[in-house]
Length: 405
Image (cartoon, rainbow, N blue to C red; front, side):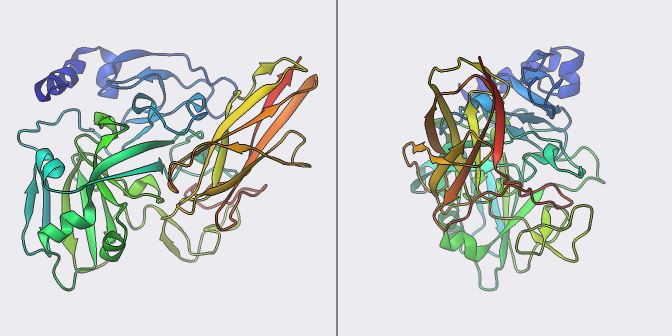
């Protein structure tokens, strides 16, 4: 797609009718959801936005779209099926690459204004396959319920990201002595001055020591979809998606710890070993959420499916963690009384989804299938979910029910 075609394509969405105006980007009218087996998602419409397939609508302002679980039976999430999560409205719908620049300023010797061509030609190309997951993924399953977007389990995705290392960009700018953090802001600007701009921060030390933190301009071999960050986005492998700033436009190096709204009070967890407190209570102190917990899911068959008794069924799904890497996946068909090891798919890197599969032959009747993963340092999933007021860090042993007959 050429630069002008991208602008024309997205501008054309403006005349698609009442719901298109409401959603800002909607390409096709909503239709009934296919997620009837999940009480959290039942009744939510499937919608199609530009460059996207049918996704589950959580909110239109700002745009929040969830990936159906059927896409999580393989390691790579297709670009068109990748979830979308913005924090402010309106969201950016077009970018003129002739004028767009990534600006690097603050405590640097040489402020930069980098075009997309600059990112591609002036810096060594880096690639990392990594999961990005909304901090609130599965929040809809918290009990007692908490405030925030009531996501099911599909606010996550895995892709191969290609771009320029952030540390190389900052080295070109020349970070000055006394620098503590860098802040990141995208093109999504709130409509009202009372709404804080979405700005995140990372420690300079984290950036310098981690070559996998990149400014990505490619996703699964193609340019980024607009709703996933075109023309460039921050990639922070192993950490929750709140740090993965989309439609990146500004980087500022600062001499202090940044604590404006989206770093404090937002996106905080209890300062306890589990990041949790007793349900219904408030934490005494909090820290920013960072590394993802161990998780695993069954992608196929779907929950509520009917299978043939006595005939083998291939169970498939994915597992991941915050960067240590998945060591083992186990499945159970008897409420966790016994477990057997699943077969792991190719290792695409320690930040990636790891495919798993297992052949299962069901007897007639209803069956509860469960999955759990262990990472390289022995972390796994528990039977009881953690709880915190923000609805973060869920990593319970997941289960689905199927009927064999």
